[in-house]
Length: 161
Image (cartoon, rainbow, N blue to C red; front, side, top):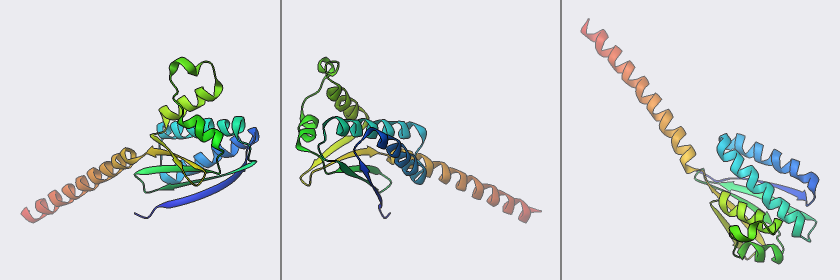
C-alpha cells in the first residue's frame, strides 16, 4: 500500500498545542486509529512539542507524518542539538522528578515505540499501528466469510428442493 503523508508548520509557542491536537485528531480519523492509540499519539506529540517550547531556539517547526498502515512516523524538523542531546541522555525514574525535561523524555520513551534522531536535524516518533489494522482486517474477513457461508447454504438448500 502506498504511504500517505501530510505536513503542518507551527510556531513554537503554547497556543500551538491546540493545533497539535487538531493535527492528531485529523490523522487518527483519516487512518481509523482508535482512542487508545489516539491517546498515546496525542500525549507523545504534546510532550515533544512542550519540550520544544522549553528548549528550542528556532521559532517554527515542521511536523509531518507518513504511514504504510503498519507504522506511523511523525517527524519534527528542524530540531536543535540541545534537544537531540537531551533525547540521547539516559533517563530513569530516579531523575524524572527533578526535571520537567527528564519527565517529558521519560514519557516519550514509554509512549512512542521508537524515537529516531536523523542527521537532517529531525526527530521522528514512531508508533506501531499494525495490530490495529490487523484487527480491522480480521474482523472484515470473518464477516465476509460468514456472508458467503450463508449464501452457500441457501444455494444448496434451494437446489435440494
